[in-house]
Image (cartoon, rainbow, N blue to C red; front, side, top):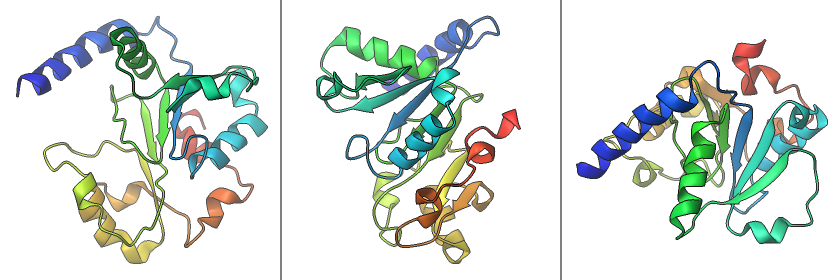
Length: 193
């Protein structure tokens, strides 16, 4: 109970400081398992092809950022997802607070503010139960979520606690839609088109 109240208070404070109109939030946070893999990597490649890294800082949350020291792409950065360092945790929270969008496929990051865009790219089999991964006390805040087909609407709405209107249908089993070269701009940045 106390942890939940503290998180709420921190979100309110951070919203006032970081999401005011004068503070630029030109960051996109990416997460996947394995690092730079799953469904997130093709979307990252698409972002680079579209030169979104010229407009946004793209930040990967990874297990060990030192593995990517030689990865030199303009405005692409790496930060450790998990750390014991208080300073690193605060820095990660700052990144989340100041991001425009969060795209993840494994670890649920969660929105800090309503104005952020949260896209669950998912990974693995879509037909296994996901109820153990959902916390029933917290609503799922995703603005978009990958789904195999309309056949799974009712199941996925119940398991993911996301209305089917937010689903992006990709097919099965390889999610060809994500792997093909398509225009994602309407999905990734719906308010900018």
